[in-house]
Image 1 (cartoon, rainbow, N blue to C red):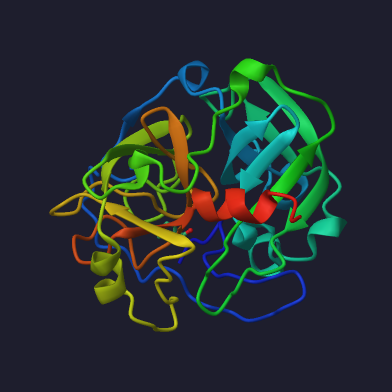
Image 2 (tube, rainbow, N blue to C red):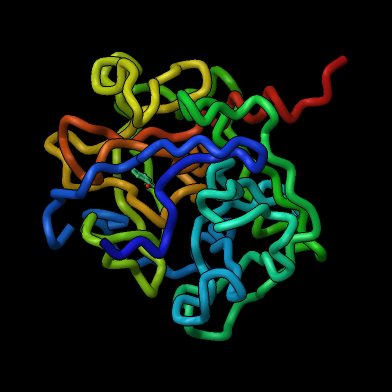
Amino acid sequence: MPRPFARALALAAVAAVIPLASPGTAAADSVVIGGFPVQASAVPWTVAVASRDRFGGTRGGQFCGGVVIGRSTVLTAAHCMGEEALGGPVRELSDLAIIQGRSDLLASDGREIRVRDVTVNPDYSSRTNAGDFAVLTLASALPQGAVIPMAPMGDAAYRPGTSATVYGWGDTTGAGDYARALRGARVEVLPDATCQRAYPGSADGTYVPASMLCAGATGGGRDACQGDSGGPLVASGRLIGLVSWGSGCGQAASPGVYTRVSDVVRKLRPSR
Ligand code: 4AZ
């Protein structure tokens, strides 16, 4: 099975292997499943997380998504920084970078900026997948216009029924067909109960409402997939989720699970 992107979660220090996605059965026309092409300039906060040393140059080294939340700060998924995803400890990756403002991974527009520091959420659980975020500090600052606001706790954008869009360069079919150019897919915020029923606890993970957000399309067909991890889920111009996990891609009974950004905001706030 082609597996350019690890689908299992691991903390740098924890070698637990948790299969994320069962073999996809999503529709062949469906990315990001069921998606549409997006110009990176229209979503300047969407970035590719890349290492050519580790993943080669055929996709510019892209292996995960990320989102710009400060001029020098990018959020991605904790599991993207794990040994299982990277094939070794992240500190051994000397060319970890983000690519911003570049739709086509093989083009040379936009910017490529080295990652100076990686902080994986210390509370990330590779068992449940709760707290799946990491903070990347960039070696140089992006323009303020590239920064997207994070929706705080209680923001109406988290309400079930809200229309949201997920962005990424991930698998467009569930069969390992990775996008060369950025795509978006329209999904809907779903009630926690939907994901609690779908993911009561298995080797894939456990839906934890406080730190996860459930989103998908009624009837399936539109979803994030492998390679989209760490990328943004946006509603009403605000960041509400990071692509995290799910069972397969685009299947009606298995919605996408996202890191709940209000929980990230809470954890990043300096405690008094
Ligand atoms: C993954 O393996 C993955 N359908 C990401 C998102 C989803 C499933 C798997 C959601 O990175």
